[in-house]
Image (tube, rainbow, N blue to C red; front, top):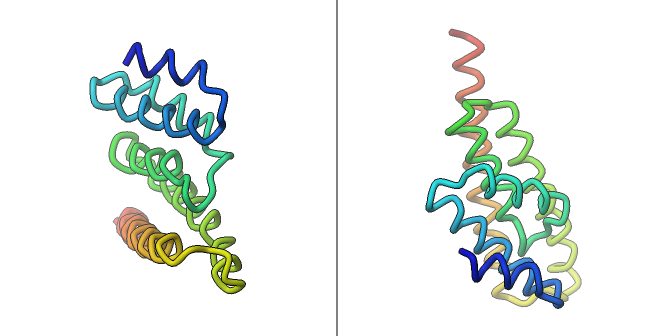
Length: 128
């Protein structure tokens, strides 16, 4: 983790810095340093785009499963879906590569599944 921290701090290329930060956040989560992982995800949430949804997905998971805050989880999931919506335009104009558009469709399906589950839980909580 110390090496990842140093590498993320000194990375000069934005894409490399992003990948290092995401790897660092996963490492923090794995060893129980959740607050540090959450800080990275929150900091990066506004920078998400179709190939960079990790922060939003991780924040949604945390809100749903740890905080038990389904409204917040739904907001993070909806934000991730919104980041993917712009990807459909690229696909239409043939800008996106096939692997990227296929991955985006898979990610979109997973996010829609997550959102549907969150909404079912919210309905049950509201009626109970």
